Image: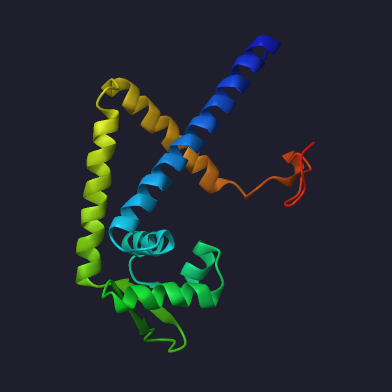
Length: 168
């Protein structure tokens, strides 16, 4: 690949990464605001979303997905259970396993939240030509599949800066 082509591709890759990052921050801001209006914390709303998409799943999986301590996750689940949004039950094959599922009230809430977000998303996308939306959707789906298939963070390409260190 010619140097100019590499430069253009590198610039496009950088701009795309920055745009996805900005999009993620925007969605997270909207999600935090929506959670607040519902009397939920952002982590509680994340758990509800995970459970909604994943169905009846072991509580230990939420600890892993949230990256939180088991006690912090248990506290979040306790709060959601007290609100009547989810329920926990012991596994039928392994009584030590605790399964988490949405209650009907939790399902209704998540359907409403999804509808609200979709409505807002459609308003944002109204000014974009359909063909560009299709192309962007296909490209992002491919990138997502590549990320899912990757082995994780590639330390060999890292800049060498560690958490807590300042980049000079």
